[in-house]
Amino acid sequence: GEYPDQVVAKAEEEIRKLNAELEERVKQRTADLNQALQRAEAIFNHSSDGVILADTNSIIQQTNRAFNTIFGYRTEEVHNSSLVELLQPEGSGTLQTALRGVLDDSQVRRIELVARRKEGKTFDVEVGLSTVPSPDQRPAAVICSIRGITERKRAERALHEALNQERELSDLKTRFIS
Image (cartoon, rainbow, N blue to C red):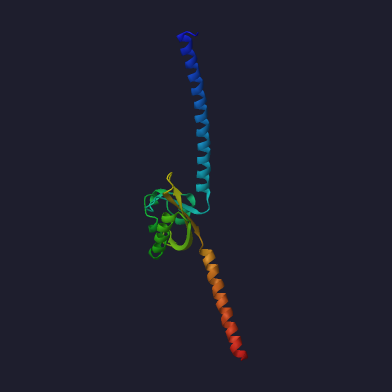
């Protein structure tokens, strides 16, 4: 048989080998996680939509560059403030209802609101709300994506006015002919 010293030496060598394999796997997994994190940060920071990450009490935890540009705030100015404070008071009820709904059933919500920039100017926005699940699948956070739709709303109003004028002209023509 083998002597105890040989058994110990063999065991130590096996442990070193396993340790080296484990360290290599940890290194690879860390590299994979860092790459995934870099991709997520790139998507978050380079989105053309304003994005807010808020906790389940609607307190802002993080904003992206587009949000900061659209609203005129620096990240530290809005961190730990209420998501609802960024909107006009008349829009906050709609937002509160949508936030409660998305937290209740984790179904994406889309709403249109009038938001207020830091300098006070208001503008039309479309807001998308969704949740980030925790490991137990309950909402851990809310993602709020904001897109300015002022131009679209202006075009919709112009189209609506043109249709109304067309209807009025058609009515006048009908009355004139009869």
